[in-house]
Length: 148
Length: 148
Length: 148
Length: 148
Image (cartoon, rainbow over all chains, first blue to last red; front, side):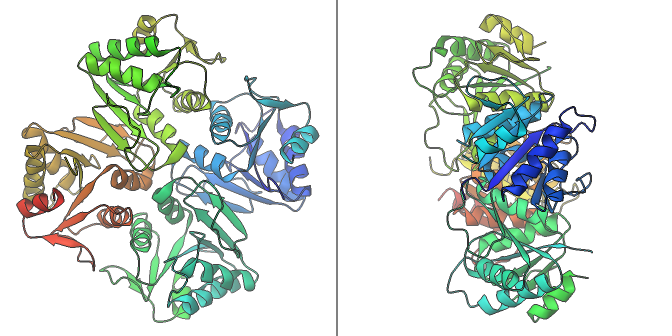
C-alpha cells in the first residue's frame, strides 16, 4: 500500500478548535489501514490518536522527551527520542505522508516544512497557507489525497 | 508492566553465531508481552524480530536511514529516522531496558553505553565484557533479568 | 553581548538572487562581533559566509552529512552532524537569533519555524511571509533587529 | 592537514584524576594546529579546553542541552544542540579523530564506540580497555597517534 505511514501534525492545545477534524482524520486513516504517527501529546495529536484507536488502528507517538510523561492515552506505542525539537525531523522522516491540521503553531509549521523538504506529500487542513502546500476542504478529502 | 519496551541490540551480520540466542530472546520477550525495539536490519536484529513476530509480538525497527530499504521482513513497524548513528541514542532512549547480544560490533557497544548513560538496565548475552555491565548465561536468564 | 550567535538561513542555489543581501548580512554580523552560523553549503549560506569571513568574522557551518564534502570555502569551522534534516533543529538551537533570507525553500522555512518554536527571534529578509514573522527591509535593518 | 578536528572525551567530574592528562592533550593539540571539540562541560572536558585555550587554540563545546548553561569558560565557541545524549553522535561525527581520557563513564564509552563505528581513529588514555581500541601511554603519544 502506498503511504502506509501517515503523520498527523497539529497543536497540543487541549481546547483546540480542530478536535473534530483530527478525530475524523485519525478514524479515516485507521479505516484505510494506515499507521498513524504523531507527536504523542494532547490537542490535535490526541484527537487524531483517539480517532484512530477507536477505529482499531495503530497509533505511534514520537516524543521529544526522554520519558513517556504526558503522552496521550490513545497511543498504541510511545517512543521517547530525547531529541527535543529535532524529533520533528524524525516524525517527518518516518512518515510517508503528512496531514497538518490547524494553524496555531510553529511546531506544526516545522513539520510541514521538514516533510516537504524530504519530498513527502503534505496536505493541510485549516492550517498555514503556504505557496506549494496542498490543502483539503475536509478530513475525508485530506485522507483521500494522502492515500493517492 | 515494568519495562514493557525492550531493545535488542546486536550485529547485522546474516551469518552471526548469535542467531539462535536472538530468536529465543525475541520469542521470550513477546511471550512476556513486551514490545521489542531494534535497529531494524539483519543478523541479531532480524533473528530477534523473527522470534518476536512468530510468537505474535510487536517489533519496531528504528532505522538510521531516511527510507525503509533493507529493513527486515519481521518488523511490525519500521521507522526511518534519517539520523545516522544518532539513531542509536533514540533506540536507547525509547527502550526501558536493553538486551545486547554478541560481541562483534561498535554499534552494539554504543547502544550499551548510551542506554547505561541514560540509566536504562542493560543485560549482556555473549557480548562485550565491561565493568558495570550485567551479563546473563542464557536467553531465558537475560529476559528474566530485564523484566525485573 | 546579547545574541552573539546568529544563524543565517537561506537556499543553496549558487544562482540565488539573494547573494548580495546575504553578503551584506554576513559582513554586518561579523562587524558587530557576532559568530555566524549556517548550514555550510552554497548560495545564501556561502554568500553570508563570504561576507563574514572577509570582514574577519567567525563562520561555523553545521552540515547534515557525516563528512565535509561540499562545504563552502569561507567557513572558519565545519561541523558534520550526520543528522540529515534534523541538523536544521541543531542550527536553530545553537543560534540565539536567526536571519532568514530568500523564499525558495522548505529547508529555510523549517529553520524559521524551528527557531520560532524554540523562542529564538527570527527576522526575515525577502523571505516567506508568515503571520508572526518579523521582516526587515534591508540587511542593515535585519542585523540591527537581531542585535536588539 | 589530516585530522584537523580532534575530539577529547572524558568525564565531567571536577575532581577527575585525569585533569593533568587532559590539560596536556588540549595544549598539544592546539600547538599542532588542531581544533579541539568536546562536550563542553567540566572535568576532563574543561581541562582539555583550558589546555587548548591557553595555548591559543580553538575549542568548540557541543552541548546536549538547548542553552549554554554549565558550559566551561575556556570554550571559544559553544553550540547547544538540544539533542540530549544523541549529541555524542554529533561529536563523534564532527571529529576526524578522538582521544578518550579516563575510565569513569558510560558517556565516554559511547563516544568511543560511536566514533569507531563511524570509522574515526580513537586513542585511549587511561581509559576503558576494549578489544580493538588503541591506547597510548602519555598525552604526547596520544596526540602523535591521532595526528598520524
